[in-house]
Image (cartoon, rainbow, N blue to C red; front, side, top):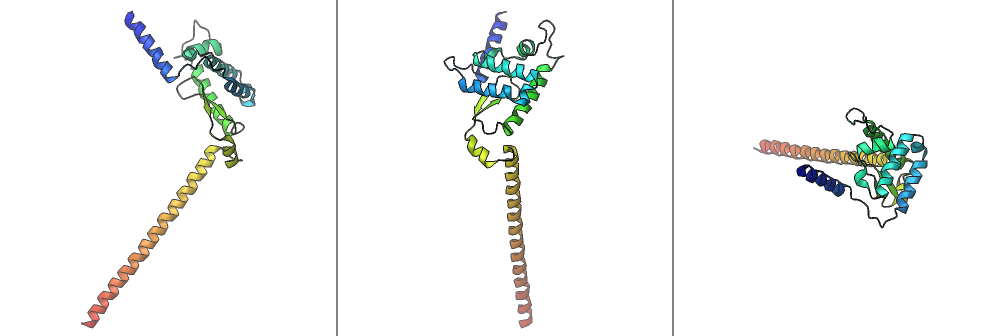
Length: 197
């Protein structure tokens, strides 16, 4: 019995290391404004599951109760599953909703929310939200007025790859030309040596 208690407390401590409980002195004003903006965005507000899920995990985070953000509590307290009958092995509602919500958040921040200074992120495999500060939103917006940051990175990678390919072909052409000149010189040198004998 004592071993179970130690193991449970150890698991809680490990969870807290991965997702530290925020300091209670912080009032999270900026984070709350970002959550409010997300909840009013059409991509989130049209889905009651997204609204309930995101509101639940963020409010728990603001309250300093990150340890209470678990699959079971999300299913029962946010998504309306019955406490007596919910089984995560049979009902994957939390995982499915989290996956869809992660995708939707990425889409929002690649389009309408690209210039925002804070981004709400649900890390893969976890439900504790993270509020990630963006370094220079105005610079990123200026760099990619029409496409997403991911598309710009892919375009840059493609240009870089093409430039590298051209450099390799130029070097190979020069090397081939130099080899031809060397072989021609060698052949002419042998021909001249044989004719002089």
